[in-house]
Length: 271
Image 1 (cartoon, rainbow, N blue to C red):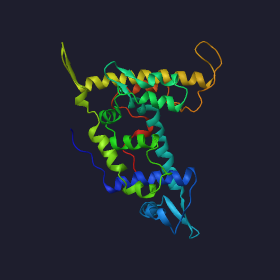
Image 2 (cartoon, rainbow, N blue to C red):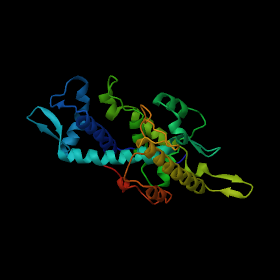
Image 3 (cartoon, rainbow, N blue to C red):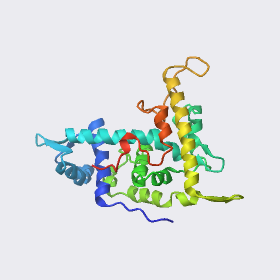
Image 4 (spheres, helix red, strand yellow):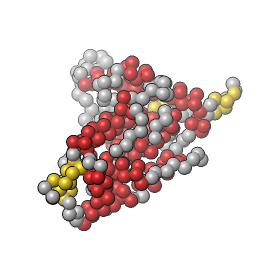
């Protein structure tokens, strides 16, 4: 096992803070200054956001997001969209045959059948390995994957406590610690040793080609056109894996360069 990952209180507060900002802005949810019952567990997060002017107290009654808070959420959501559209493709890779689950994405008509397909044991999650390869904080990648999988829920009793102090943060660190590493991707064949970095470059190249195909297919669906010219409707209940119009095929080609970052991934995200 490699070096254990750590998450200090400030970083945890940043993740919890952006999660709470999203709830306040997008749903929208108002929190009274006098927090009652389970919502009292959110006070440290709201106070942290208040000191940094991401929220304000309106009419001595409620916490409300400020313009600074809305700007911060917009930047994070752009980064999160890039994660879904670019990095999530590595969530299920069959290393034995060199196949990506996302190659079959449009073959599944609904979310349940897609999730069942992803649950097959043959798939390896390479998102942390790709993050390390590209110099991206793997904890952020796993946090975003938990968001996309609804692992941070607001329906369960006690979610307010779990947001900052729950075991989910230990789970995220455990995922990072036990994820496949670059050196574990290496192997030896008749011609000698193939380094993990070499394997990863090949994986990224294949993923880039697949992203371009998915983008082209998605564009065809958006226009209501199959490859044979027949009219079609987008699959119901599906979220397109590639949905950033600013990315062209040339943009995706640049992802083969391990030093390349999408425009929203310059530097480390923080509040």
